[in-house]
Length: 123
Image (cartoon, rainbow, N blue to C red):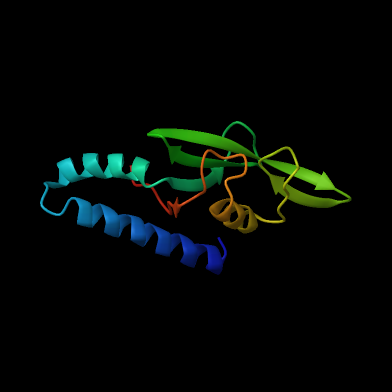
């Protein structure tokens, strides 16, 4: 992970945690964890992960409408250059950071703009 992406991810995760902590300050930990999961759906959290079904590709997973939605990030080659796309090559990005930054500003093919990056999920 590049330093820029790591700093961005850490900052976004901190904002998410701060929101959860301020929403449920007096609850017990188990109750707060359940409420935190509900809050995460409402916060429009997203992450980019390795695809399990297509090796060497990525998936954008995001919460929207209290559901988790997954979008395959498709690798596209054009004149020997590799690009990433969510929309069959209409919008192309040379790296995943560009893709994420674009969809934070534009809805495009997604149900909504990307809001909060989830850096890690503890299970």
